[in-house]
Length: 408
Image: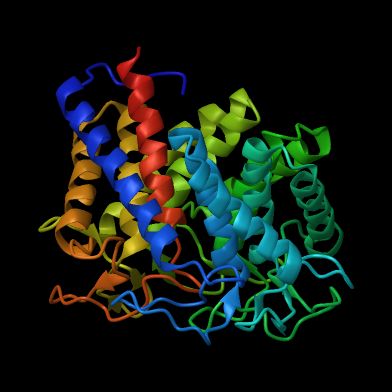
């Protein structure tokens, strides 16, 4: 960060940071205590009452996000127990998810580690890069770096679209054309998505911190350009979510969580490669993208709604855990770059929303989300998509940012 707001409210930030430090420890404790599956990595699912499903399939994204979170947390806590959780996730991925036949990592395995879905979902490959780069930072394990570099090369070899630029969503186990490209059942079956591109650049930028390769840097710069040219709408500043090969938009959906996540994450990626032109560009772009996300803000409680269909006017009036975590960071970043105190208050309000409605005060961790009537959505606390990454990262990112400002 090159600049800070003109007025820094020391008392507010000190209290905010203290609460986030406590919350980070709470999140890490819950995942340590409730998700470890003896001899088999981590349970594929733990429900909202903290009961594990020992027969549930295990996803690459969940295991990678655990590996990343506990690796990153080790730099905060210096806890050997946290490093051991990261190591457990790393070793399980290497033993059961790495495809020794065709390269890359499987999308899912059964409860006992047998390959279930061997497709090469690029989102999953990216999260493995992201996690293994982070694990390498704290462990020095050269195997982690070697696999991360190999995955980068596989993505570039098989997923990169030489003709139209960007990355294809998914391939078969053998890296061939896949008929079903969807990341999840709710997604459109389209060739390119904002979501996958966002997490490719996130992964590449993290890899660059341990492997500052010039070709990797150019790929990050290209992705920053792709977001500017195609993904961030010039009409309304929301992220366009789905595209065909030629970058023609294929969906009117607006995802407020992805808007506010991109608002701060793309600027961070530019900072990691020290590209001053892109740093300046994305610090400017971040504010209108943040303003666009405000369309989904419920000013009554500080939470973000999930999605809006701009064509039909239909809202999904649920408030899921991860957009709130991203709102905490995204609004804070908007305050940093603009100096507008209202954004800092929105960040604090998002945290208050989490404490009031999403945090499980009895058992720990955050619920999946709440319905419009504030009843808890009865979905898992840990699973294919519910991981410690969004909320753990929000805590760590804000602790770092607040500490930086308080030491100026």
